[in-house]
Length: 183
Image (cartoon, rainbow, N blue to C red; front, side, top):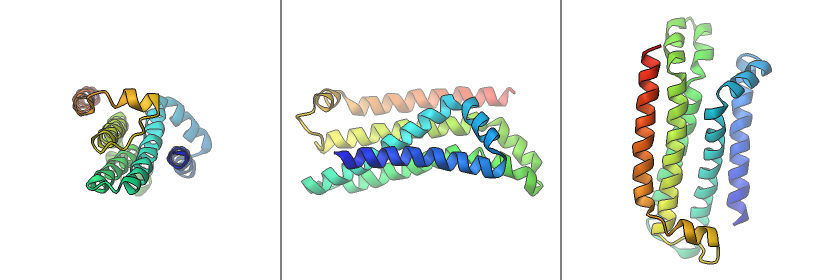
């Protein structure tokens, strides 16, 4: 149980370090810090969500080995893809920092208009990835009965929770998209 927590924490910390390093190299540390603070309402959930997904991925992987569960490997791989999509969506908005240097200022301005949308897509895909992993854990009974938290969590209908998170996230993305268009 400790390895998934360590891997998840390391993944979240690495995500934050990578984010800060990229922005520091492209601009300055002050810019990296101010951008992080400016978008902290997206960045903190992204970092935490990415760490949770990585931790859940390793949890599912280790529990599947222990139980020799079939079909779990594909589910874990799919969630790994969702995590990757979240990270790409998060980092895509930083193209706005590089494009002016490449003579593509118009493309940079266009992407800057949708910067919050890219971040929201990252958060959304993190939520979907986490819900998908929890649903997989429940479906394959990869949780421990001794843990009161997991026992209560897995009483929930996680399929409906996944559907609700997709619906709510889609609505939020639509609102952010239309707000970006009206700027």
